Image (cartoon, rainbow, N blue to C red; front, side, top):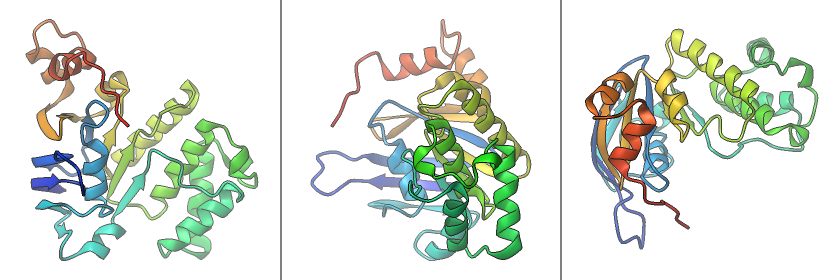
Length: 247
């Protein structure tokens, strides 16, 4: 589904590459976890694959569509759940979703049905007419997710989709993602919740300093690392214990 070849990104005036010579293949209907410390290059990679940031060098294709030749078609088959809320706080949940859905060319009964189906599934149907600005963090995360899947994308990119939410909201989001994946959606997921990634992802890749250090099924990576009991142990061993604060 996704084929990445020697993909690199160096931002203007930067001393080093944010991402360097990355090769990766992600199969259809995988849930692939991109893991790494702060500043490792995860968001840069997702931004390039989403056609939001232009690569410095290298290439990639999604479902056979390349960034250089099929940028607009490529955008139509992907969904993005950003780390920040991509919602209008003064509009209601339904108004937000109706507006954002129409931008994908969905309208009429189809749009209305999809909105209410997702709102109901994610426990938000009773809040459809409430302004998003008054929602809790978990509720905003759920509306954010719905906004990215109304057009039924083939590939869904999630950048920290459960950060700052309560346990109940996180559980509902994860179960909804599993359902989308079971119905054919390929999911690319970044998170600092390594226990969550260990149980959700079919495969993971650990990125550090802009390079892909390792990849594989969580259980395989754990078994290969001496004295590792879980994915967090593997992550610490590979990336180290040093703080990764940056501004």
